[in-house]
Length: 183
Image (tube, rainbow, N blue to C red; front, side, top):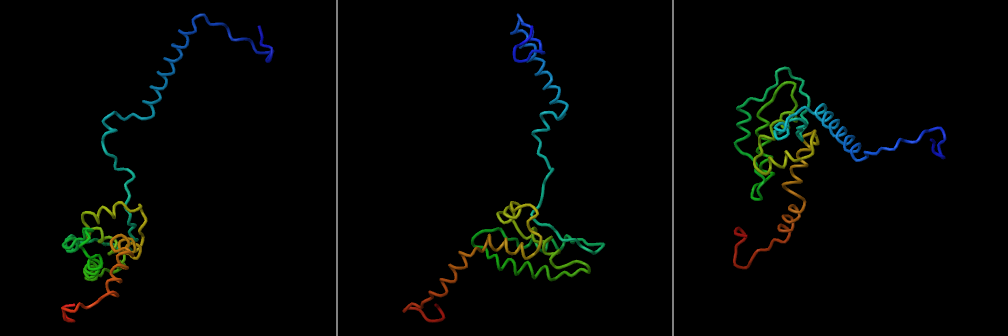
C-alpha cells in the first residue's frame, strides 16, 4: 500500500501498542543522553562545587624585561607596602602617587625600564577598596604606566573633584573677623 503523494514509498505499518512503543523509544533516548553526558564531562558533583582557577587574568600587562636576572626583592615590596592607598575619600591620591614614585626611583636595574618596575610594584601599594578596584578593571587593559595613572586618577580624583576644588579657590574670601594669615 502506497500514499498518493509519494507513490514509491510504502506506508508505515500500523502499531497496535503505540503507547508502549513511545515509552520504549523515550527510555532509549534518555539512556543515550545519560551515556553521552558521562562521556562528555567525567567530573563528579564535588568538582562542580570547587572553585576553578582557569581563566584568571590581571588588568596590568607587565612589559617584557630584557635583563636576565630580574627580581623584585621582598624588602622593596615591603618598603612599598608600608604606605598603602585604600581608596577612602580622606586619602590623597596625588600624595600616594608622589610617595610611590619616590620609592620606585630608589631602584635602578640594567635592562629594566622604570615603567616595568612601576607596573609590577603598584598593586602592592594598594589595599582595601583600591585593591578591589584594580582587580575589577578590564583584564589586560593596562599596558603602560600612563594608562595606569589615567585610570587611577580618574577613579580616585575625578574631574568633578578638581572642579570643586578649583571653585573653592576662585571663590575664596576673607571674612571681616579674620586676618589674612588665618584666612
